Length: 405
Image (cartoon, rainbow, N blue to C red; front, side, top):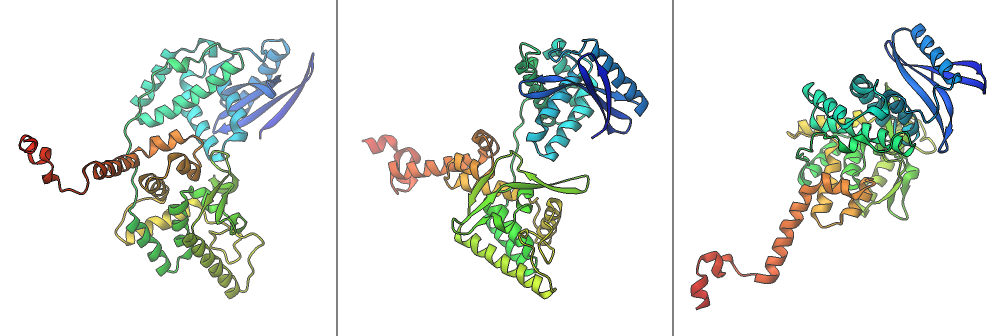
């Protein structure tokens, strides 16, 4: 990470660290001990040159040696946020950590970072949310910042730094109804056929996989042939491909959960066809597939995966050529909407999507439940009233009294 300094104090060697977080932005921290099974640090964010950061680090080391930085010391909100980010980093994807750090550094730290954690109130947070809204952030974006602050403060409660979480009493903007756009079954079929007709077997396979499994782009790009369980007709989703700073890395899924997603005979046949095409392409160029090739790869040997953004751009170009609009991610919405709308229970759908909590699935795809409600009404109407035409029912024709007589 950054440069390491060492100095000797009364209790032994004290290590400090300097890390550059951006142009003229540094983070300095010192190790304060262990607690609850993890290493604890006190951190500060410094603006200026490296010499300024080195001086601030030296001050931290002196404070630690003098006993002014006890591990349970409340510290500032900025220090708490840094400790929280360090703790959750091993459990989150690189993309998620990048977004969290961006929210902290751009929006949260400048406003409340200097406050002591035990002095932070719901009123401070409400002022922060109002300021973010005034800057033009959407209510959903402000709620995401609230989630970051709430999670960090919740960790402080568990550490015994504060007795209660002030974010519990704050008032972030409420959720606004969101509409999930999904292509129709006919459109998805046309896209797959068009991609195959253009000779773009990789894109056709990606569209089919996304529509049937509901997997995320990064999860699809990370799939290798060893992830296909042919006897069980299932895909083992274990990894996700993320691109940060033009560097592609394969790591855990967004929720760090592994799951097996069943596939039907038709998708199995499409995957077998994709494998044959990949082997034939490698043979034509005089190459051989690597031991465990990526399923979605444009390289002859299958050694390099397609990138998520590349799939999205190819999908968008194909859709436009057919007169459609939309994004690749809508195929994930399509999968969930169709399953729920056709009566598959939400827990099963959540499992296929990789949602740790089925309530997330319910919240995002509540529109599909309306479709099921209409089906339920038609089902019960048929049971209660039979196949009669509405005009034969007295209430519908306005002849209830005459029918009774």
